[in-house]
Length: 320
Ligand SMILES: Cc1ncc(COP(=O)(O)O)c(C=O)c1O
Image 1 (tube, rainbow, N blue to C red):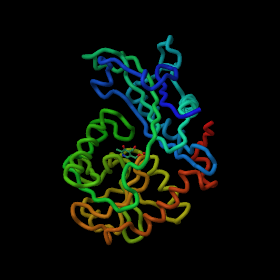
Image 2 (cartoon, rainbow, N blue to C red):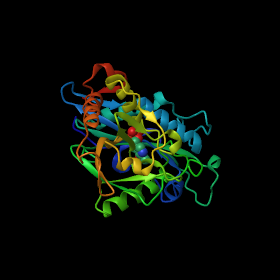
Image 3 (spheres, helix red, strand yellow):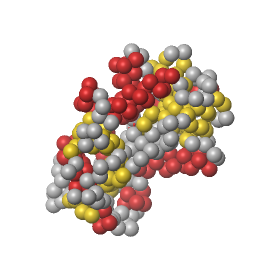
């Protein structure tokens, strides 16, 4: 069987071109949705799709759904908060769709849980119905990981969690990321780095941030309003296990970044990306740093299923 674009919507698999929602859909007007970005990395040796930390992605999706009272129904006939998908259900839906699509290349897996009620001028989450969709698309690089990229401190600030939940992937919040990314690209940079409301470092437009200074690896704390990134957590664990370095979580001042030996960004799409320049100042010698390179090499082996000791992070799917 060749590869074909299929989607999952309203409880069943359908051809992607038939997966549509109406113009009145609540999430389209108000951003009332939660999503995930998951990578499937094709391993040509084992002929398997290696899906990285699938369980953790769906755990984060469900955390976001609980905050937004999004309960996509498992049985379309029953309106009840308990009648919703579990992490295991989502994993099963994803594996089944991966097999159905049959892609033998790297893919991006995009689950979306959304307020599907076709109703506007109603801002009461508990009154609105929910749905779940899943699409899988062939996906290559997001940012060039081979080089050290050129970043700009954004004029946009990352909102505070007291304004909108920041630890989960809430669709409405991405207007902020998109404004920052667009500003950076139109200004001739590769990526934006956002400060938080307080003026300390939060993260990239779609990545968490790490700084290396005097042999220490430091990342902003969860309370600095960054997304609770799964790659961030993986890097923290890899640094401990492989390099014997305990990553410090603390506030980072803007000017500390200019003085850092190395900076790198982490994310499902961006993997580990070195930052060589920030606001027209060189970071280190402007090239990929030594620790960044070490982490990058281990991380790539892990996410492509080349490290057996990290198999518990990898769901390996046989595609026929
Ligand atoms: C704003 C933001 N920060 C950080 C990340 C990195 O998160 P993860 O490593 O879970 O992909 C992402 C990507 O999902 C993101 O969109």
